[in-house]
Length: 311
Image 1 (cartoon, rainbow, N blue to C red):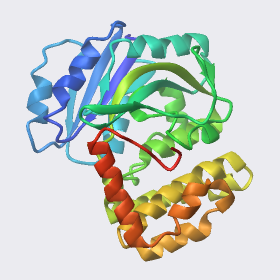
Image 2 (image 1 turned 60 degrees about the vertical axis):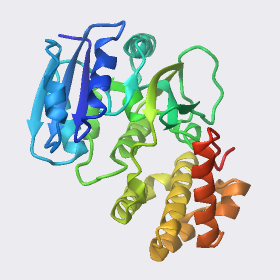
Image 3 (image 1 turned 120 degrees about the horizontal axis):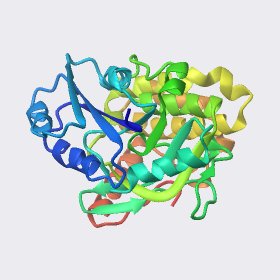
Image 4 (image 1 turned 30 degrees about the vertical axis):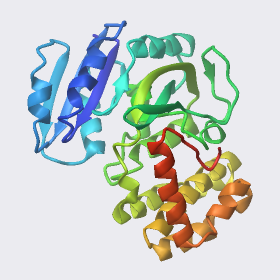
């Protein structure tokens, strides 16, 4: 039995999947299998994935059912005790798996193991992820996952590992969530288990590829995810903080998309004490001003400069 099962959901990523698979096969730690679940791709993704002749690769195919079901099916099929997730357009550095194993060896009772990562805002421009807690060079247990994740999330899908057993106990990915399904799972992990973090950067997240939250349908689904935890956040100030920051980000998206009803609901549900000064100003600005700031933000990224509401 391999130590890790690497589960990759695949849907119409023919441009990226070759490099993604190579980044796994080139790992310094070689005790793994790769389970690729083709979720009904209509391009040449399946052809690209099947061109690899490695015995480590198991390629499954299903009708298009969404990424949650693809991941759940891949994990069901996996032979290993530990699952490492990777999206079909992200890349691992060659020490990714060995650094995840380091955490597992140090904190075997933790539920979620998270490596540090870099964020590509465009093809040749990246920045380090920023977290709201102090760390040095050693692996550690994150004292407060929710507070730590209000800038960038400590748990990023392509940078985590977990045991298959604990994943099953938590119920897996929720198929009804077309977006936010990963964040939803990390919330459940953090509510029930310890979260480990390794400061070593081991993966590259291509944030510029997916912008699904710009779609109004997905904004409503994201709202449903956030409000799944109304009961839990009442007695958990850190969870309330984390969800309010997510409400803020979604409110800005809704404002830009002319979703006035959703914007007003989100604005009324936020405890403004959980926002910083910049966020309090931005969420109250007229739609036209927010759109201008968004365009200016895109312009700055095109010139290799990035800022956020925490910058």
